[in-house]
Amino acid sequence: MINLLDLQFNEMEELMKKLGQPKFRAVQVFGWLYKEAGKGAADFDDMKNIPAELRHKLAEISVIGLPRILKVQESKLDGTRKYLFGLSDGNAVESVFMRYKFGNSICVSSQAGCRMGCSFCASTLGGLARSLTAGEIAGQILSAERDTGERISHVVVMGSGEPFDNYENLSSFIRVINNPKGLNIGMRNITVSTCGIVPMIERFGEDFPQVNLAISLHASDNQRRSSLMPVNRKYPLDELISACRRYSDRTSRRVTFEYTLVKGMNDSESDADKLADLLRGMLCHVNLIPLNTVRERDFETTGKAVAQKFRERLESRGIPATIRRELGDDIDAACGQLRRSIMTEK
Image 1 (spheres, rainbow, N blue to C red):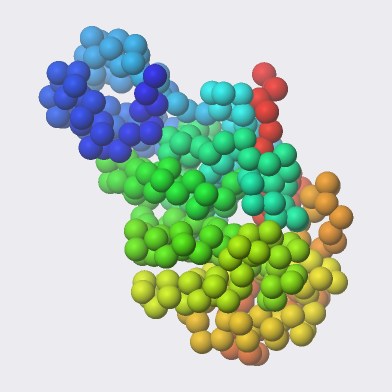
Image 2 (tube, rainbow, N blue to C red):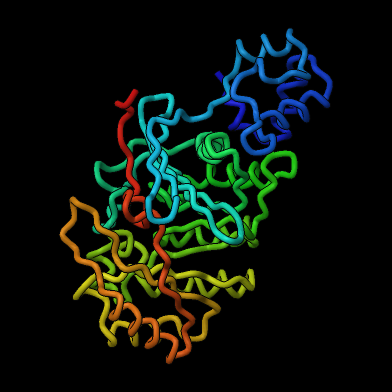
C-alpha cells in the first residue's frame, strides 16, 4: 500500500496518470492531504470533490498514513503539548507542539530511536529501530494540526533520531512541506539539527541553502566531546568546525551551535573561552541548554547563575549566545528528553 503522504506532487501526478485520471486530480488529492490546519482528509471519503470511483480505487492501493495519537501531555507551565504517535509497525515516536509569539512550532522525530549514542540523550536509549519515511515525518505535523486546529508555521527536526542518518527521507520531507501545494512552510522556517555527520553537512548546504542548520556541539575539545558524543570519534572537532565554516561561507547563513551545559563537565569559564576560540570568526550563534533531566542518566544540570556567566563570557569574546527557554520541561518534552517507545497504549 502506498502512503500518499510519502509522495511529492509530481509523484502524485504520475499516480493519477497511471489511474487514468486527468492532471487536476493530483491537485485535488494533494490539496486534501495538506488542507488548512485541522481540515485535511484523514479518510478518502473526506475528499468530497473526488469521484467515488477514484476514491474507491485509492482506498484499494493506498493509505493516508497519519500517525495515530496514542497519548497527549500538556504542560501546566506553558501549554506545550507532547504527542506520542503510533506508527503502522508498532513503533511510536514523540513530537512536541509549542506556541510562540511568531507562530506555532513543532519538533518532529526523524527516526524511531537513534544509533548515535549521545550519553546525555533519551533518544538513544534502546538504539535505533528504523528510519521514518517522509510521510511519517510530515504526518506528525498534520496530526498535531488536526488535534489543535491550529496552523504550524515553523518546524524543527530535532526529536528522536539523527536526521542526516535518514537523509533521503529528510530531503523528501522538506520538499513536500515547503511545496505551496502542500503545507507551504518556508525554507527559512525549517531547522535541521545534526550531531555532526560531516559529509552530509556539505551536501545539505548544496541541497537546502535556505534551511537553518543546527549543530549539537556540547563540548569544545575532542576528549570530552567524544565521551559525550561517539560520533566525534569519526568526525572530530577540527573536521566538523571546518565543514561548518565552509557551509556558512557557501550559504551566507548563520550556523547555530547547541551546547548542553553539564555540571562540572563543560560549564566553566575556561570552557567558554575554549568554545569562543573554536568558533571565532564564524557566522554563528550559540544556543546554551542547561541539561534536561533524563532519569536513566547520571548527569547533573548547570545552575542558572553559572549558565548566565557562561553566556556573558562568550559574548565578551564576541560570540553571540542565548540561554534557551525550555518549554515542556514538566512533561519531559524539552531538549534531549524525547524518546522512542513501542505502541502499547490503546
